[in-house]
Length: 536
Image 1 (cartoon, rainbow, N blue to C red):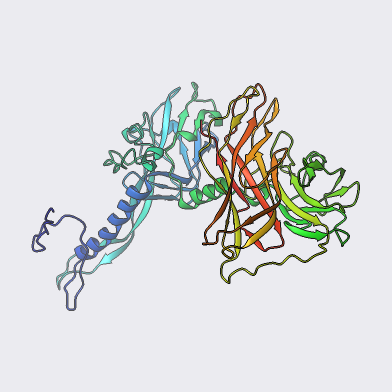
Image 2 (cartoon, rainbow, N blue to C red):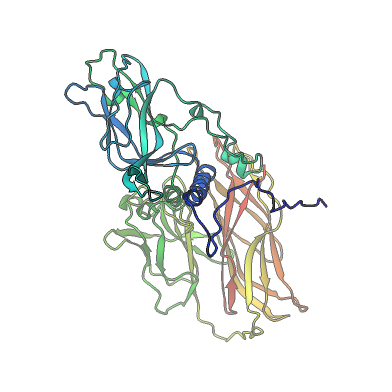
């Protein structure tokens, strides 16, 4: 291990900054006070230069401001900048600059209020760069007390130093503005490069604009001859924070609509003949485009054991004032089965809100994704089914999970394969017998000019008989026993085939699987959905 060498504090030439250490009865001079000020000023400059960089922060726009006899006069708006040495440059009020009278040799007095740069330099037809740099002004002169009892003349000293600035016209860009850029932010974030310290500044200028002067000195300068975007900019923390929030979340009014409530509630159960809702009522967070809310985007399917899923015939209406869509079946919801409500946020014609954003069906804050909910209508039981009481602290749970990698998917109407999925049951009582209705809905998020991708009705299941449906499959009246020694009970779904229409330029990237369960035995769904990706 290397030994760290400590610098002897008795050395007089110490690297780094020094500040005054005060102690009682210390004799202080003006040099001590200046040294203390210089310590903090240098730290602030170093902080600005290394942490924030330099350039314009806000304002300082250069615009034409012609006046009588001054056709090339421009105005520099108020603003704030950081100089290459780390100095703050604050322009409180707008300043006028006559480009016909500035340049090398021009007389400049930055300490005079409302100053205008003047000189005797002709730049007809040339390109100039309006630049700014930090300057200090001495102010508030006071009388200096005599140092002794003699009769010396009374002199004056300025008692304040005021921050100011100098405006100048440059004939070419300073070296600091032509240096090659450093490593990209992406390389820094990915660990491909190290951040380099900024080089020592070679000049104090902050260029504000490039100006192409008219060929005739009597022609008024126009706005299209001034380029304010050549400047180097420093983005404030507030500006960066605002942009990050907008990029990640978007303004509140631009967030896509989402489903805030649905009746019947998700996973609710009704007994046939009881008070079953007459319609499915869906409430949204924003107003929708009414023409996108129809029987193609709001659908209800009914699942029965050993039968394919069927679409429930009905009518869809939309109340824009209350942001409510209503699906009213052609016949009342009295037949037994599992009813699935699909609200389209993906596909070629999704539901769109007033801002032309697709419905946020999966509630991730982004447009797209289908909203899925289920409710069950079952016949009243003639004989009560004994329900084992789960061990306290170990409720019966189910989750859908992947059980293997996903092979590639081919196009041109040739089915490919997806990964195996597994329904995993855990908790409950060892040896507990369970009877439940399980349903898995698959959503392939891809849409093409040839139409959406569809799931081929061919799924193989082990352990329970699978009922195959369009884009879904169910395990009705599934019966199984939890392991007598405890642990999980898993049922794998070996294969799911996908058909991609001909002419599809890209295969889908992922499939989302939703799971729901209804049972006399209380079963908690740990994760209602899982997303699996294709592996090419």
